[in-house]
Amino acid sequence: MTFDNLLATDDWPVLHAKSKAMFEKAKLLMPGGVDGQSRLDSPHPIFMARAEGAYIEDVDGNRYVDFHCGFGSVLLGHNDPRIRETINETLALSGVHFATAHPLEIELAGRLQRALPSAERVVFACTGTEVTYHAVRLARVHTNRRRVVKFEGNYHGWHDYLYWSVRFDPSSAGPVERPIPVAQSAGMGAEAESEILTCEYNNTEQLRVIFANHATDIAAIIVEPIFHNGGAIMPAPGFLETCRELCSQNGSVLIFDEVITGFRQSMGGAQTLFGVTPDLTTLGKAMANGFPISALAGRREVMEDLSPLGSSYFSGTFNGHLLNVAIANRCCEILESEPPYESLSSMGSTLRRGIEEAIRDTGVPASIAQFGSVWSLHFSVEPIGNYRDLARISDLRGRAAEVAYRRFMMTRGYYIHPHSVIRGYLTTSHTRDQIDGAIAATRAFFEGYRENLLN
Image 1 (cartoon, rainbow, N blue to C red):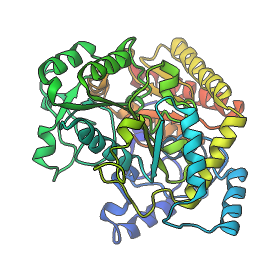
Image 2: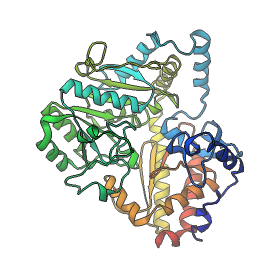
Image 3: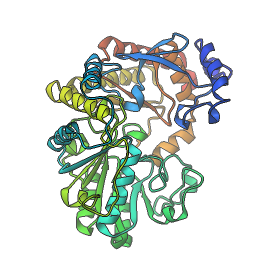
Image 4: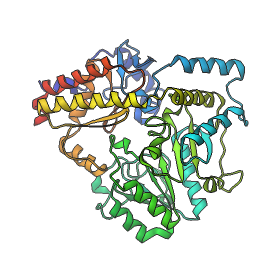
């Protein structure tokens, strides 16, 4: 078999007539027919109608085991009855939203303070982009410096401060020894470009050179402690420790972007797993099982430069949103009383080992990365330690295999969202049978399309 039947651009390999019609209507109402670029897909986006447990269902009635899980924000499964109960109780007893101080945010801040080594003080917002923005501005106020080091491929939200060198052609970014920031959107400010320093993820030698040249200007390093936006790329031994060392030695602020790793990998995030404590931490996604809440946590002496104590302005109508805080409290309570991390990691390891066995048996050039409940399939056997490795693999192999795999898995009842890499998330609602089914489907793809994958 060839990829042709899976890559036909006029339709999906399963019936999606209603989604197609909805997309035609949406194009008359919304730019490009979608509410943001990440929802677009070819030949058209699939419109989802409902989700329950580990399943998601589209408007045409197709039901899939969901490996997207709201970009990883759903950890306890869709529409968890315990969360519904909390929603109903909160609505009945308190309402939806105050935009004032309220007791539940004190409770949630206390939970984060107990869970995270860095969380001496905590504030809340709604999205990850908001809190990474505030983290950078706070670091600049605290240090009275402007420049920020970020790592190529790491995604920290869409604002001008940090939306540089996320998904880009490395030929436009200069040599790895002297990388040039690449703007990821039109309209970004020139002053933002002058204040960003890019570095290859896991490259401690290059990071030391950057500090040797710019230490007195560097307000902060911001980093995904596990490079999940590149597909479960782990920090090399000593990498996070070097980030901590350089910040401590030079008076810079170390920011861990734990919007993905926080709560999903551990209640205490990657900082507890690796034993490296940042000065500031950004959190979100799995914190409230799909409801929009985020947090900025950090050392007291840094956080107290936020208003009202400090001069780094912090406010927002929906900060500490009553209903979202109540849900986050309930999620934390569940994670504290019924820790799922061992079973999630075991399930992830089962998936990885099964796919590794299928790779060995079929001889296809592929590899799977997995940590805890996050996994990523790469159609290459080359080692991947940073974004440029990932881009090189994409150049060599192309995207055809990834698109074909996603579409094939759809025919077997598995949903993997379009992304720059094949990336999946597990929830406490996923079962061993579903994992075994995903392994079998992946093996069938390798066997059926082996010649395409080898050539």
